[in-house]
Image (cartoon, rainbow, N blue to C red):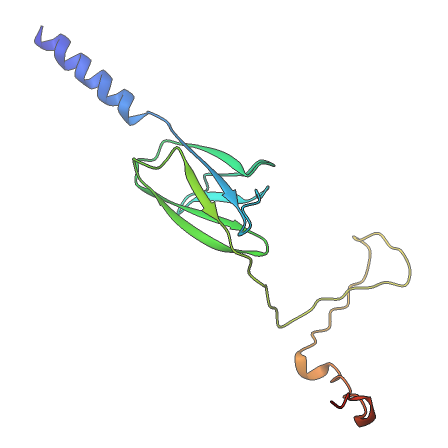
Length: 145
C-alpha cells in the first residue's frame, strides 16, 4: 500500500510539472479597436505568438506562473504584463501609439534593373546636417491680422 501511495504521488506530481498553461487575452489600441499581428513573447524565452484579426491570442506554455509577457507592435509602444494565477485566461492589453524617430534614412536606387545578387551597391550616410534647410517664405507671404 505504501508503494502504491508513493507511486500515485509521484505520478500526480510529474503531471503537474508537465501541465500546460494556456494564456489568453485580447490586444486593442487606444480607441478599443483590435490589433492584428501583435507579437506576444514570454520574457527571457523564444516562446511567443501573434494576435489574430480580432486581436485575440492564445499562448501555450509549460513555464510556471507568474511570468512576464512582452507585447509589441510596429508603431506602438512595448508593454510588459505580469501574468499571475488569477488573470492568465483574460488578459486585456491596450497599446498606445508611439512615433518612431530615426536619425538616418537609407535610400537605394538603380538606373537599370539588375539581379540583386549581381548588383553593385553604393551606400551613402546622410545626417541632418547634410540635408538642405527649408527656405523661409518671403515676408510678403505672411498673413497680417
